[in-house]
Image (cartoon, rainbow, N blue to C red; front, side, top):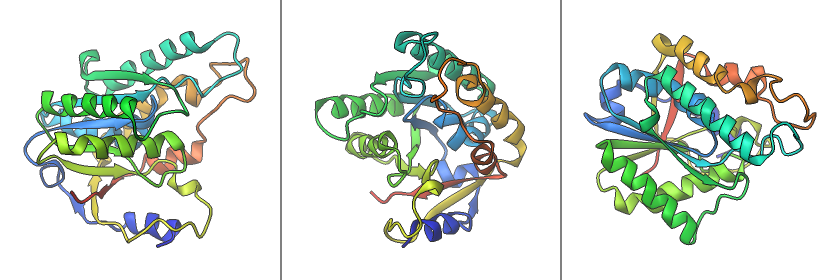
Length: 245
């Protein structure tokens, strides 16, 4: 199936309740970069916390690839900034700082296999166990960013350590794939109605100021989220593609 048709099909997935999506348990969200959690799962996290569920967020990379030419924010300062933004965003969604784990793997160089990936997989499994996760959520394996694909691979490595935990993938950058890109079979999965949490999600996304504003003003080549992309991901539904065991 082509990517454009696949993603259009995710907009027609059945709408389900939180119980149907997750089961009666907590959940773990895996984000390749600081901000992916808010973009792809902000409504889910807010809904789960409002329902009294435990949620743990695992951020895989250090996020230092977004502004590589800034003198005001060299790598260590940029990492600290992006982690602080993530903690603020998580708080808006209902999480405490203790509910967030930063693995700090190198942005744009997250491995899909090998010892480092296995260690990351163990950390994901540990987070899932700690919050009694019934489901794990990670970026779509066909997202064009290498770290998004690697994050999906890490969760696949973690799956044998998480018996009974459902796995879903959420697209973030899929809409930028070239037309005609083949991505496999039609999606199966569910959508979650996050209408009640859209404003909360938008505030969480906005908390990532380094990615949404000109906060880092000395790197003209630095990354910035486009308003159209934010609007697409902050609609009334979040899409979750089910990955069979």
